[in-house]
Image (cartoon, rainbow, N blue to C red; front, side, top):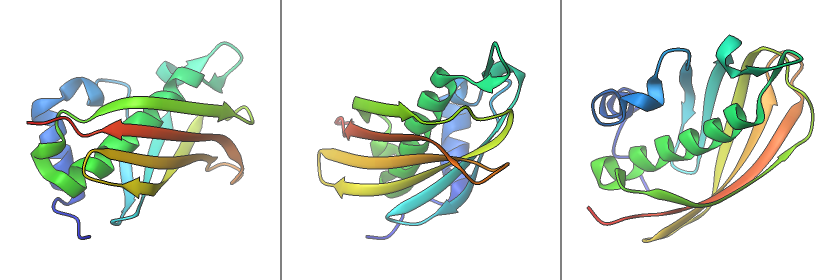
Length: 142
């Protein structure tokens, strides 16, 4: 299954239709985009940190959710605009330090109505797995 939108087309859609996903302080970059896999990088700065100087759990959960949505937009263009998260489970394994973290998304199932993806979050500083997640999306009708 081929992708229908490029990274630039996905981000243009987000800038127009979902600007809050790219609000100030959130710096996402798609570094790999393929039909079954994507890598999304976040430069975790002050707004994503919790006391103690580690990347917060909510910031990593948002990254998981955002990353899968990017992959669905690349697959379905604006038809994915109403896709919603129906389940998201995450295990926090290590405390990531401030700086770049990468979400590595792999599609487990990609059907007409449900998509299930696994997302591993890796710290760029040391290459260690800091969180592992699985999420399910429902493709709403346009």
